[in-house]
Length: 467
Image (cartoon, rainbow, N blue to C red; front, side, top):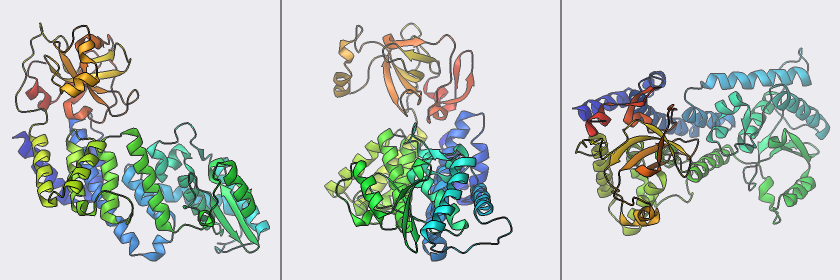
């Protein structure tokens, strides 16, 4: 059966481990959307396993752990696996060489990392800023601050934009290459600064403001007050340990995924790595008894139409009711296998064109809300719960609930990762179909036809034989 073949293929790829990741990256660029979709899920599982192992290895190597960029590179390769780490190292080295020549001269050898006077440190800082924010062109991403790519070094260096913590990691990594001590202040709320310890004081730098030199301690306190941080704490300017930096980067990602309601695989993959690696040990995550459930739920989320908030609610319910963890795992495994075996339900639906006007694969614009979406399923009448019908005002529609409703994937540019159920009277077909960006496209469709829209895959053809 299709399900048995798919399960065997997933098992074989998982056994291959990290060696299969590079191959999967290339295969997921396939023009067959379904192949790209399902192999992308396996790639994500393998990346999670790889990242957990890398975190554990890094913790055991204190010398590497103290090099600030190492953990950030693991996070980057997990989030942007198609971007090779060696290219990040090459860019950092290139910037370091350029700063070294600018500050120390081309004929001077490697300079030891040590505390210097404020005057000498300021000279190095100006050289750093001239290269990092000047010739290289790195800057703070004001327009799309909460873009997850701003947390991945490879993406930051390629797009040349980032957020305070990622910009600070890059700046500090280059600083150490030119002999300047630099520490990130990971305990500061709402922002991250870099502290440069000097023999006769300290210098604080704001990398989000193109390396603006704030000054010493008193200037930083004034800076904090101007930003609304009235209750000063000396802990804010205490240099953060590398582990604390990684923790903050992970928390940033979790906040972004939750805020944007990104698909479950994104948030739960991050949570899975955190829980398995212990990077956020002691953080306020779901009940500790659920630790062994993360890998299973990560796989469940990557295949089923289960989203982050629903999964977290499930966690909360299990923790509060005291349900046996092993029973919960069996329950989730059953849901997982059912979703793989029957991704659209067991009974095929035969379409009567006189009753159901539109077809699966057609792209439309919503009459009232204006978003673009593609039809991926249908029902002859509204099959949602009475609560949903009341909440959405279905009975206030001219044709009410007794009209065809269409399962739809909404373009992420209009509404991130939304899948919805739309009344036929609200659908306006596009005369010239446009592609819809949605992470679940490959689950339903294998290709694209510029004349008619999306081409159904085998699973969708089984569920809707008469498209």
